[in-house]
Length: 277
Image 1 (cartoon, one colour):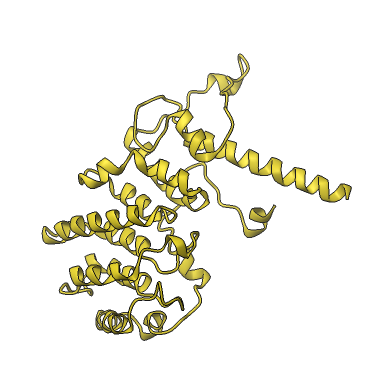
Image 2 (spheres, rainbow, N blue to C red):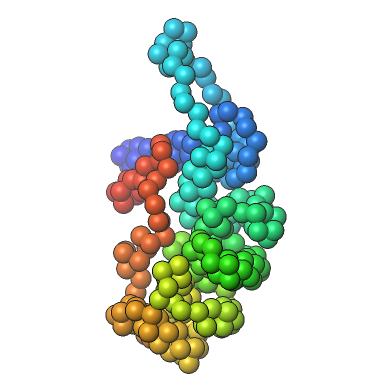
């Protein structure tokens, strides 16, 4: 009994320490005004950490004498967007909404950075209506970028996550209706999906049309067959399109595609054993 109680206390202490470490990583010590909620109170609200005090190092110590190099504003925005995207799966629905709230104007007005677009797509626990609004906005913006031959991959990647039939962290209650897949396919079906700039369409529709074995979530078979044919003509192997023809469990390799770049400085991901402690 004593061992079990000690282990429980250790786990609770570890979770609290992780929240505090995350808050430290998210706060902007320079105090510069920027997006992504670098305000200390907002960070604590989203992360769920208790108030934090930053204590200076002892007088004369190396930590006090050393002046760390401060990344530029653009570098901090980029790192924070990547960090938020990677931890978004552990946030509650309310905290995901809080995170997105301050960025909606930038997204809908077309002023959002590519990493902010990817971040919006990773918020799987958003309400369905919020997701539906984002999908309509991102389709329109992606088409505009394609028309002028500009980089649109972040928009296509975000659409794939917002339309995903099998979310990585959320439940079926967060999946948008399958009726939203048809207009998305109609918007992009006339393009050449084999073009290098449009390769992200492959993953978009592999996720959007995936069979999950739930009639309320599965896309109609006729549309899935159209999508599978389009993908295979664009060079996607039949082995990959099998997941939109019949039910296939989601593998670890597919889950790893949620992350597309290295971790920002100072952030480490633990192993599965660490997550269980």
